[in-house]
Length: 145
Image (cartoon, rainbow, N blue to C red):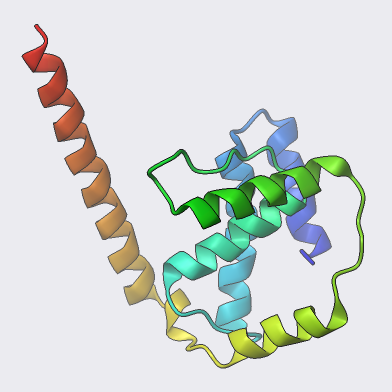
């Protein structure tokens, strides 16, 4: 369950007309704080980001699921389910056993996923992927001319 201040920040971003990704960023930030505080861990920065995005969708942020080919089919389906849960407005309490199991599993994960070097490495890799994707699309458009 996201903290009240995180939901308030996301609502403020929405009121200011900011993009859904910006609103979801508040939930990702909260997740990174949880890892740094030692509440739980994550295997990688990507996992921490995924947890934050899932929480955002369930909280009602209008963040679309990843496009086909960008993520696995299972991830896309889960994102669609999270988005539906967020839009339905119905909040059914999660199974106590499942919640406990999830938290216990995350507690066994390392805390280094939210460290400065790990986040820096992730950001550089993501930027490199964006650059290479740009090269592919620009070369395609130049061939059609």
